[in-house]
Image 1 (cartoon, one colour):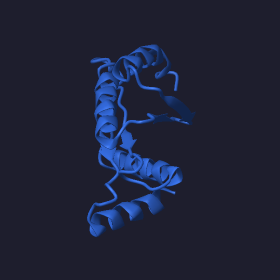
Image 2 (cartoon, helix red, strand yellow):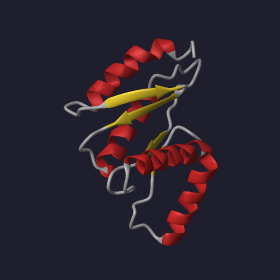
Image 3 (tube, one colour):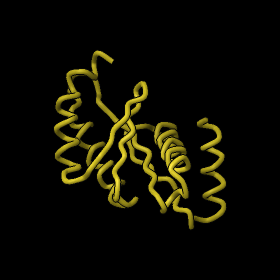
Image 4 (cartoon, one colour):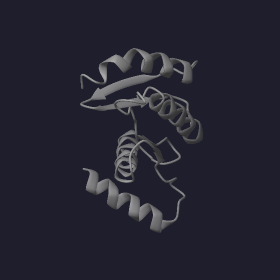
Length: 129
């Protein structure tokens, strides 16, 4: 965690710049940060997450530590029917991002996604719990 501390101010400024004019709530849990963007659909949330991921990666020291971030993105009603489901879907998408190499954005599948894709995602969701 000490290596992260110098980046926090820069990260906060980047976040504010990339999420301007959006009411947000952020909750930290260990090394994870949950960002809630009210009235922000899945495509826009994914776009904001990708901009933040790139901004965070730019904080890396070419001769030192790499700074990366993985994002799991979910939205009501696109990927979930309840807030609890949305949080679980975002968590499963984050788990998938970490499993597939980190430093990436993964969106939870849309509710209208194929049953096979939903089944695979739900299995990942159970594994993440």
